Amino acid sequence: MKIIGIDPGLRNMGWGVIAVEGPRLRHLDNGIVHSDAGDLGPRLAVLYRGLCAVIARHAPDAAAVEQTFVNKDALGTLKLGQARGIAMLAPAEAGLEIGEYAPNAVKKAVVGVGHAAKEQIQHMVRFMLPGVEFAGADAADALAVAICHAHHLQGRALRIKTSA
Image (cartoon, rainbow, N blue to C red; front, top):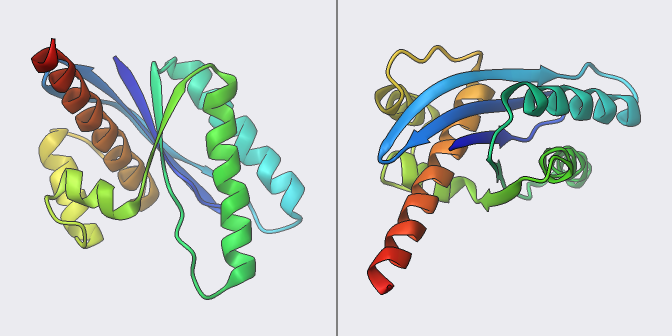
């Protein structure tokens, strides 16, 4: 199974694709879709087209998107929410089932604690996906989201197996 993890952002939308083979995780690719400053509509279009191209190229079986958090800047939060809408729309249009995870849930799944620093997350992602080279911090975060979803799916499969 291939999973794409997406870290929504208006300027940098990180993505990472992993393969899940039983309990093994394997890095396939990662990157960042960039949008420049300017009007919001064209920026969202760039993010959408870029993410759709990544999905078409890698043909994942599932997607996972990090939930956004509300901060003090209401306008910034609204814009980030619109970028998150693109992060949900592109995989939905490709027919993918989408898992959504709070940042603390991602950190807990990858590091073991919900308040881990970015450096700890990147260290654990490197440990879980040997040889990975990050296209940037946003791509590393996206890989962490994909790993979180893989763990969630493995746990769900285990619960189904034990209840049968």
